[in-house]
Length: 327
Ligand code: DGY
Image (tube, rainbow, N blue to C red; front, side, top):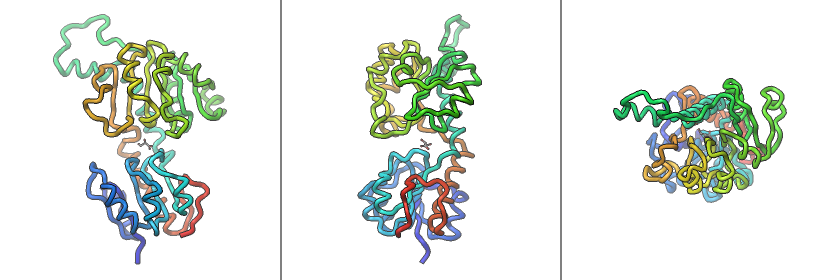
């Protein structure tokens, strides 16, 4: 019998054709709708491999019913939807999609920064709504980007790629990270900072840190209050790193100038969410890595990881380095 692979979202046929040639592949039938949990559990119970989205919880419950499961390939670099420790204990390899999405995500992060700083979304709506009646000196005037200080929280590959873009805008780059990044310091002149100094002195605070128990609820009212009144806050990592109620109050009370958000505590965010009622918020539907080339590249990497594990070869991008094939 061929190994069985379940893919939790409808992906383009060309993205999965390599798997279909060798394995039995079943794909959830919708591009948008989540696979219901009970169906996911039934499929996982039969599967040798799962190709998951960041919306699926891969937890102890799922892992303990998945008796044949050897690999979960998650279509994202982040893997906070997965209990990695439990996966290792069950002998399941976890793979993600680093590197392939670095530049696209950095492009989007910088675009979000620019849009929030220069009020691009507000301005575009203003024109389309027929509100533009005359040229006015301070009409939709925002914050300058060039020669300002950008503080990057989370200096991984995407953080470094954002720093590189910032240098092109003559920005002063500071960063906070669990460990110092000498390559970024040497190559780009980025300066390591404590978290407190970063929030106090940055004009742009860009959150790119993974969601962990240490980073959950990192940005609270107390932190926003320390920022400059002209500060622009950008989040392109994970929603729960930010206390959204506190961010809302900080924006509403003018404690910071604007925010650009690609991620939210609960996704998709409800259209009536208070943050979406503010004109100084640019909100995007978690599209950091969403260029066609990059998303296709991410799918290919998931496919290659699954094929490697099912063929007893080394996976390309293994998350749980302590994993060994025991199944
Ligand atoms: C990731 O890869 O973690 C992104 O958030 C999804 O685009």
